[in-house]
Image (tube, rainbow, N blue to C red):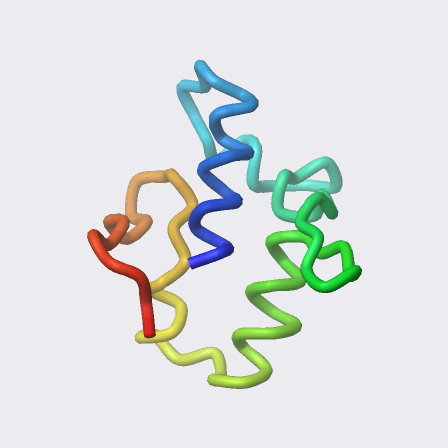
Length: 83
C-alpha cells in the first residue's frame, strides 16, 4: 500500500512521461531514491520491495503482483488496501 502510493507520487513528479520504464531503470531510477520516511528511517521503493516485503513474504509471484510500477504489464491498482 505504501509502495503503490509512493510510486504514484514519484510518477506524478515526472508527469507527463510517455515511457515510465525509463524512470525505473539504471542508477538514477526513482526506485532507488530514498524519499519515504517511516519511523525515522528513510527508505526507497527498492528498500520496501526487496528488503522488507520480499524478506518477509518471499519473492513469490503473488507477492510480486502487488507492486504497481506504472508500466505495461504492471498489475492494476486495487480499489482497497492489501491486508
